Amino acid sequence: MEFQLLGPFEARHDGQRVLVGSRRQERCLLSILLLHAGRVVTTARLIDLLWHGDAPAAARGTVHTYIGRLRAALTPYGLEVETRHDGYSIEPGTHEIDAQEFGSLVRQAAAAGDRAHRVRLYDLALGLWRGPLLADVADGPLRDRLGGPLEELRLSAFEQRADAQLALGLHDRVVADLTPLVPLHPDRERLVAVQMTALYRSGRQADALQLYRRTRQALVSGLGIEPGPELATLHDRMLRADPGLIRPSVPVHAVRVGDEWLPWITSGHPALEFCNTYAGWGGPKRPGSEWLRRYATLAVWAGHHGPAEEWVVAGLLKQAAEHPAEAAAVLERAREFRRRLYACLTDPDDVRAFAAVASVAGDAAGSTVFTRGEDGLGRWRITPTAGLLLPLWCVARSAADLLADPRRFTIRACPGPECGWLFLDESGRRRWCSLRICGNNGTLMH
Image 1 (spheres, one colour):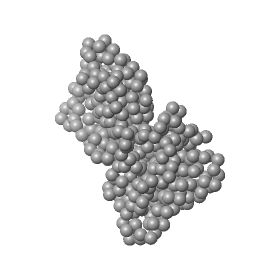
Image 2 (cartoon, rainbow, N blue to C red):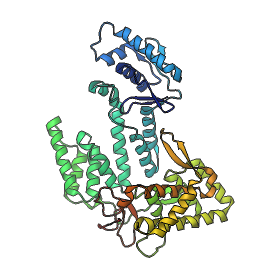
Image 3 (cartoon, rainbow, N blue to C red):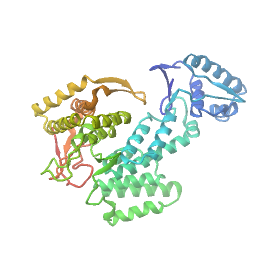
Image 4 (cartoon, one colour):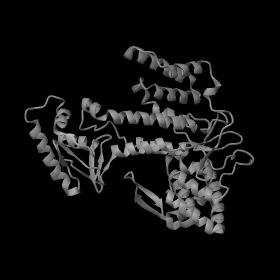
């Protein structure tokens, strides 16, 4: 079974909702056991949580009744509520609990060495939250008692993801992610600090300073304390326009993945990232600007951006070593596809470029299947039977999805004379790529 606790409670079996007609308190009791999966929750603890310390005389019997009903409802689906001493427990087993998956993803993200991979893991973890914990079965006081560690982990994940995003130059993403969150947590000074830094690096110094003033007022009036030294020092540096707050003028464009150097993530969409594997669309080709130097780079790129699993990439590298001529031919096709895709994205009226992209996407469709991912969501996958063409088919599929999405009309090209990288600007305010080295004006494609 699959249980969703990070938001309204839901229980599903083979995609179908179950326990729909159960009582709210029964679902609440089950949620408590699921949040403590693998541990015993005593009857006394359950009574205290369900009735907030004001339990009726028959509370113990009521809990036993609830347990009986839950067992009757869940046993057909292979989930057992076990009696242990003076309490109950649910063993994790093969059942999926989003709160446990969230914790696992956050731990993986914290251990990830590559920042881009770390951001992706944090994205997956935070994407599991659909609202307040147990939004429809727990009230505020119970949510605070049950969800304290989870909420702390969630806020920490936001902070750590923002740190990694800042290191990758994704300042606009940080601002967008944290804007609704920061005002709710003025006491999270690390959260405030990364948002101030993101605003400052986005050219919004006044907004960054205003955020500091609002935070200081909230801390003084609410807790009677001044901002800590880290936040106060950051504020002083912004007042002095400390150049160290801005990324160095000479950027590092590459990230090491396995044995390959890949470009930093700059756009947030795989199809655009594929175009951005050539650094220099806006000017003469320079040494080092061509990232797709060999097939291995193409294969590792496909795995780095998610379409291909690690074991698939390993198989592709082995195939390429055994059939170097075929791998070289695929690499040339990928470079040509990239050129056509760039033309198509920067000029929606280029019918020939669109037809060329559509032709490759049509070929990719023949090797595409619809599967269920580990997160429970369905998605299109290129099967390994595509062989060495798999990375090209992956990006063609992504390109087709983007070309069918209205967001394609928010694509901008960085105006830097030696750049031209592509990125999405749904806010309508960005004027340069996320590396921020190229200028301050952009052209909206329409």
